[in-house]
Amino acid sequence: MQFNTQDTIVALATPMGVGAIAVIRLSGQDALVIANTIFKGKNLEKQASHTLHFGTIIDGDVLIDEVLLSLFVAPQSYTKQNVVEISCHGSNYIIETIIKLCIKNGARAAKPGEFTLRAFLNGGLDLSQAEAVADLIASGSKSSHQLALQQMRGGFSNELKNLREQLVYFASMIELELDFGEEDVEFANRDQLKKLILNISKVIARLIHSFEMGNVLKNGVPVAIVGKPNVGKSTLLNVFLNEERAIVSEIAGTTRDTIEDEITLSGVRFRFIDTAGIRQTTDVIEAKGVERTFEKIKQAAVVLYLFDPRETPEAELLQITADLKQTNPNNSKLLLVVNKADDETVNASLNLFANANDFIFISAKEKTNIDILQDALIKAASINSINTDEVIVSNIRHLEALQKTETALNSVLYGIDNPVTSDFLVTDIKQALYFIGEITGEITTDDLLETIFSKFCIGK
Image (cartoon, rainbow, N blue to C red; front, top):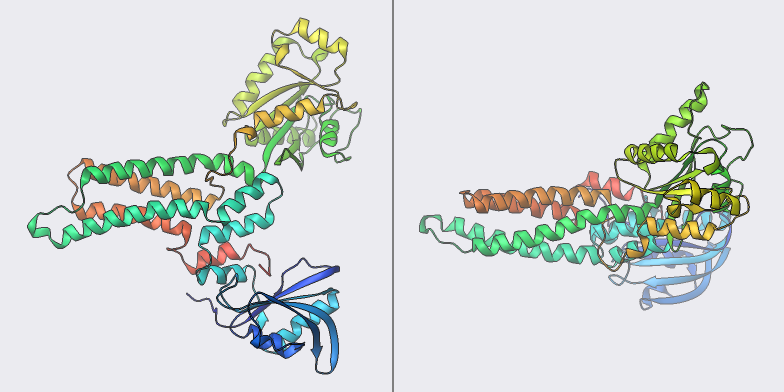
């Protein structure tokens, strides 16, 4: 490893900007010594871990601020090093002065994610848990919070650890066979090994399959609002967001590009995309907007098709429905929504459309039946069926490693069922172990760590 973990680092752990309180974090062998140098109060080096101390920060004879210091003595800390957290007043001047004093007395400015990197390198977290820390900080809904918390507390890691231990055992038994090659002995029962590989393959397949839902929980459910021009798409988006996010006009074709924003419904984040109205047009810019509409339909998990039944014959609606389903290769859920609905519109729809009972009738302008539409959205996204107590994969790096693991396990199965020598068999098992190790951090590189932790905020 090229990372220096022996020096002492310092950073602001709370967001930049003026506030009531700011927290400055020190971590490293000399954290207590440096804090003691600028702190007037008790001798910090003689205090117990997990204690709080009131005093002042001084620069020579100059008083900087009254503060509260939290002590975490190694190894009983987040980074497994000595850690001091200075709670000061949230003045930018005070924050900058205290950090400069720490650097003046031997600390250096921390890099993004360096505190969590040290927690990983010192054995406090494995790599998947460290990544979950960033997800927890970024979580914007109840479901994404629960998912990140479950992973940070080791749910995913524990499942992989169990699989890895079983594979390591069989790999060692097969390697032992190679040491006794001339004696033709078998330490690893092939039937038991096949049973194990099949069981592990089922677990890996389940984890791979969970990514689709995990990605939704982490990044939000993409919902495309589509329909003809001037049918009320922008009005509906504004109702969902409870603000004038999109321009509403009687002039058809006002929305010429996609507009995106997020809301949380029942603890789940939805990403709404207001699209340009679908129609034939000679306007180059509007035509580009229509093209982007179809791109967003392809990416959506749920498509809201908003329409006026008085302007949409049943044959046309059937054709539009078929086109929308064909546009999205992921088989997204399609909700047919009648806007500007009053009693007359509802009755006319029931008489004119054979599938009118499948329609959702709303009035975006009057905010009528919006709660019914929201319930339909949650149901369409299958949110109610989510159990965040189960291990769910939400990281694309983990998904790719699991897919490679699956390929390696298939090679092991082939080797068991065919006359493949033990050395090739153990190589395939080690390949599977390698890819599992990439997830948890037993196998890693400096470049990978740099990529992962550079995305963290400074101070975490």
